[in-house]
Length: 110
Picture 1 (cartoon, rainbow, N blue to C red):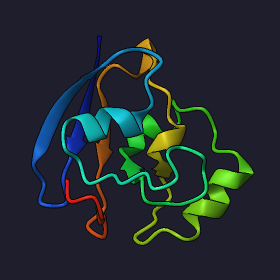
Picture 2 (picture 1 turned 60 degrees about the vertical axis):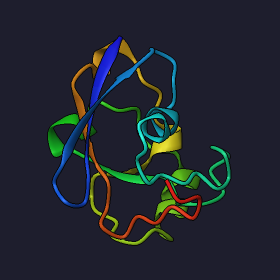
Picture 3 (picture 1 turned 60 degrees about the horizontal axis):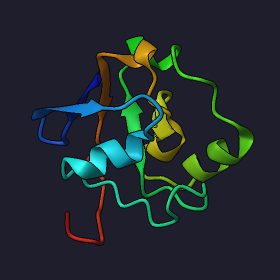
């Protein structure tokens, strides 16, 4: 199992356990994070936007151009923003910390 800490907009830290190969979007949704993922991971929206802790950002695979284009549409984007649907959990990411932007909205009411 891989540990991932989600930090809510209010600063609450919520620890999740993930299986290698899972997408970060699914991991967050499973613990009730407001990550809508409207396009179901097809990189056609930005409703799963997260901000990766700076010390973890460079450990991730680089974002492709399509992901960068979608991030241009997200609210509250930072230098370490990513789409959680594009982050595959690996053993090397054990301890990953990601922040949920204050602008996150989950239309599904999670």
